[in-house]
Image (cartoon, rainbow, N blue to C red):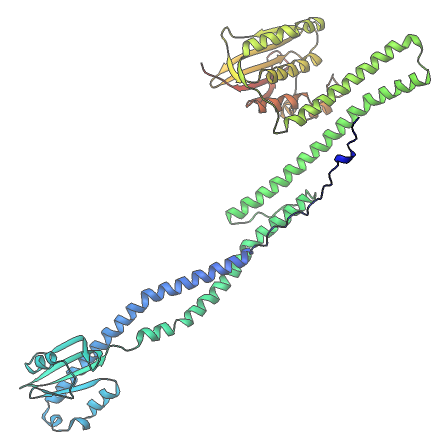
Length: 469
């Protein structure tokens, strides 16, 4: 025999990786609020600044035109024209307002620097209104008014008023206001969004630790409401499932303990020599029956465990249901005769083809028939039926036994439910048979239904997808 001690490989358990720390909902809401505020400020500036600058330039041109009209009217007055230009208060006021005054006398302009075409136009008696004119190396708006006989006056103001720069410099105020409002809105929104998520996280942690009494308050908005409802439903489902599991385990432990106690008692009697030779055969039969009962219970438990596994083998093929049920009836015929029961097949005259696993389907039929054989009294029928409904093929096992109540039908396929109700009242199996056949039906792509049979007992129906020829 080969020594395998040298084949042992040490296994080092690595610590579980911690999830990377991510930004909180509040932080993301704050960042989002700031970004939205900044975008709003800059978009508003891009739209409003050009409009404001254009309006300011238009207002400046209109004001310059008004000033040109006023100066022209004053210069037309003889008394005003006799005053030297440097002593005229109006001209001084205009100079203080960054407006350059050009006087045209006999076709000559003072001071120099105006474009000749503008001077010539005013000298010819035509008014001038120009938005951009190059004067001394800079662009200026010009308003000119003729005074007659080659005289005139022209006012010029630079277009570079600095409005755009002033507006852009003043943007820091709304930017700071936008950032402040974004931070405030982000904090409020983040806390509002994070609170139900945080509550749900705490509830999930309590659920994972085994606390099934946790419930969340249902509040708006709709997404938070659905989250709270889902957590509450999960808690209720876990509580119900664990309660049924505890009841099932208690039932199974009792079911295991009873035959083990019997076997142990007879084994001790045999070991102590209490059982005489004549009683040995009877004791052996009792021990064998209890061992078979244990074997059946363990087999059902293993089958249910295997059904939950992802690698449970299903080998579908084309199956004629009528032929499969006919074969099953022939196999059970001797036991029907032994129990004094009537086997009543209801099969169509044509093949009913389905694509399924024949071995698993036969396991379902055998389980249902075994269940009926246990409770149906002699002289009563057991019906094996096959029929077709739109899109589905139907396999039915009906009996004339004691049947099930409406409350029984609601829990018929739950593990151990009927076993607990009828233990000591009627013959029961392991308490797992109906749960097993229902799980098998689901794995075959079908459904299982329990109901009342017209024969007076229980009806169990398997629905399978029907292959249309």
